[in-house]
Image (cartoon, rainbow, N blue to C red; front, side, top):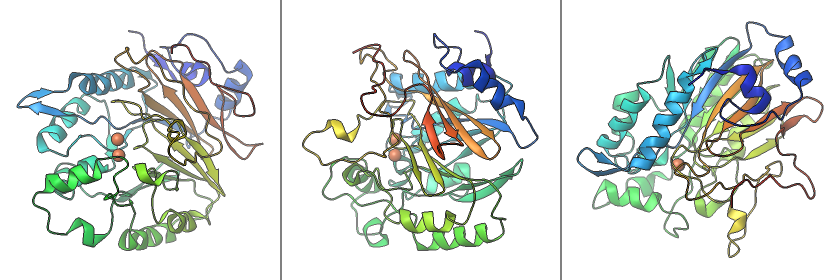
Length: 357
Ligand SMILES: [Fe+2]
Ligand SMILES: [Fe+2]
């Protein structure tokens, strides 16, 4: 396989797709102002590694992660680091987390992680933290301040009630449309930590927040939702340039709320349909979202993928690498003041192309 260049990714979303969709002039603009603060990283999410028994795991989910790792290693130039967006495991078993980390250990360079609910609710994150360290932290890279939040916490009383087993708690939280489910939240103590962390940062420093659930309210019964999203957003409000990148929803979502740009990541395991396709449910999608097309469900990698992130001038452009599907680029548009899907334009009457159905 050949290397995947950054230019190819921004121009057409990757070496694995067919045609270029971005005029060359825009590519030149993107790379005409290279400076030390411009860099790239990769984003892989939601592998849901699932143990069948012993050393036997669901093959398709393994293959999605293995493919993302292999393709990330082909990026040229190499990304500065890789971010993993949560839900390594399906039921948070140590065997699943270990197997996922073993596959991820094939990545070249540093990997940063955020906790997903499928990593957490069996033992309240104990094994994940033992392997990977704190579940919320910040770091600086080439002038950008990165903040990682554990956004999948919920009410203490629910988490610590007398469950027969941790797996009972996990199975409650792992279900969609569960009337006994609980909303995700960042919580008081982590928000206080965030307030203090951001106090040290000048307001013109670009901020990238990495969470598992969306730090916005989209669809509560699937937990496409964070209950204290507005309070987190308020802490981010004073900064000039803020991006939130999240996993969990297994689909492309794009939004802008005030100064904050939002991008969701694809899963390497499976896609969720858009809630709007569930007619019996009231639904709401972020208004800038151009809904992804489904690939052919008979393809193993149906509507799964991973992301390549281009940071330039403190803004975030996301290339979605979608095996067996048309890759997509969602990039910040300075004149519009929000991210725009360069591949499939939002707006009346526009629909993403359906290559398989
Ligand atoms: Fe997930
Ligand atoms: Fe999740």
